[in-house]
Amino acid sequence: MRREDPVPSSVEGRPLEDAELTERAKDGDVRAYEELVLRYREVACRTAYLITGNAADAEDAAQDAFVKAFYALSRFRSDAPFRPWILRIVSNEAKNRRRSARRREGLALRLAEGRPSGDAAPSPEATVLSGETRDALVAALERLPEGDRHVIAYRYFLDLSEAEMAIVMGCRRGTVKSRLARALARLREAMPAGISLSEHLEPADG
Image (cartoon, rainbow, N blue to C red):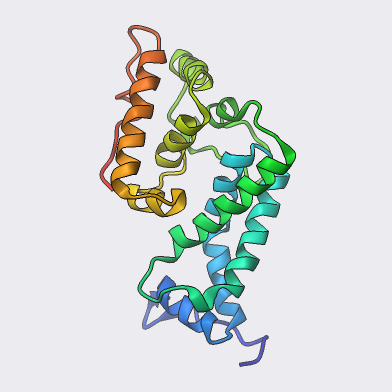
């Protein structure tokens, strides 16, 4: 296949599934892999930003992860979902960069405020949180251990399912459930009396 040949965007009127694109990429179709990158670049950058707290580092971590994933496609199981697999690689790259740079300050604050910080900055939660509740949540998150902040952010700020979290975190789904439950319990304890989390961080199925 020539490099300039485009990847069909659909088959019989439907978008190509991740599995189809992955199989094409395994066969050397670079454009198919580029389509996967476009499909998951945003969530990859947001995941990396969650860990690094720095937009430039997040972009670099995501880019490096996509490159490493491309060369590791031969080891990718065809029956496995692509999204959690690539996010696991992104997470590892971001953790390596965070350890090197030692940038940990203000992570929960930037997440909850949805502060603009380049294309990698997460912001869905900014549409949910506002006013006194947001300020109280920011303060409560800052008092939590880093691991608790991350598991809450994976689930509610990045909207990963528990199954995807298990792959990204490298643990069992039951472990995800227990860690999330403990983190939410600590967050509720840290919140001021009279402010409920249930309106904003209600656990969802998945």
